[in-house]
Image (cartoon, rainbow, N blue to C red):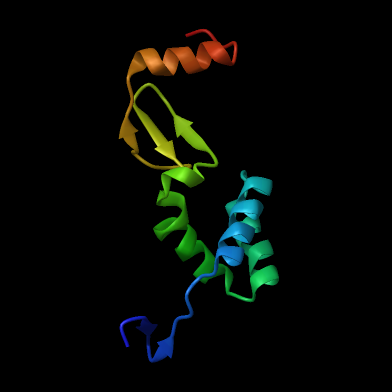
Length: 103
């Protein structure tokens, strides 16, 4: 039982479930808890299971970058609070300039 936890067999995620999760995260990007709860109602999985799947699988896939946080020190994809990857200050300044913010 390689795909089990505490004697319960974990069912694999379907592409439809994955698509619904991504759609709901896009819709509720400022409140991931709400996105997980909405997805839970739609696909009959617990919000905790959905959150675990988001943070361990979906959010790490570079083709599913839905939001990012950045500062002069870091860039984090699909994470609100994280050390992320080191960023270059010139890139950060370009992004701020794009949004009309001077630094």
